[in-house]
Length: 177
Ligand SMILES: Cc1cc2nc3c(=O)[nH]c(=O)nc-3n(C[C@H](O)[C@H](O)[C@H](O)COP(=O)(O)O)c2cc1C
Image (cartoon, rainbow, N blue to C red; front, side, top):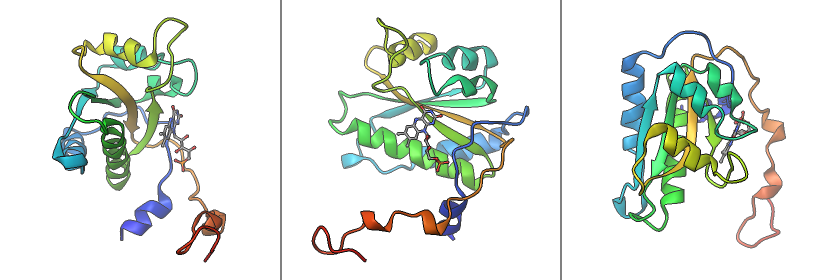
């Protein structure tokens, strides 16, 4: 049941020191390429990174929330061409979430690393830095980096009692379940 995957899913930031099999990488890529996108324009592109030197360089793309990437065996960088769709942010985000859930389903841990709207330093955005590391063409922007690997940490599922039921409104705002 898909709900069981959602119940156990967590963002994983510690990884075993072993590679992700090519077959699993292939399934993850199939999953992201099956993502829905507005009007089917598919404005995203992906860069699969398994070179530890490049992964380490990407782990410094922003000062906070990315350093754990240095110890991941695999990163998939989610890019998009804003010229191909006015809602590329939504399309790229959906693809990143599909990736996260597909990786979880394959027994892998993963975590989203936000680059869009983040800075490398005072003069360079995190996306510009990553684009330079990856040699991206000018029309592509980086949305996020997904760190992926076999989990080396066990995080408890969010308890059902912790769900914010008060965020749900029925028919009119303020009518709660
Ligand atoms: C849009 C988005 C951006 C995120 N950016 C980062 C990030 O830059 N670094 C990080 O360590 N985690 C990042 N996360 C993971 C969140 O911190 C995580 O989903 C949240 O704390 C809830 O934890 P859980 O996923 O284990 O339920 C991001 C998640 C989303 C959806």
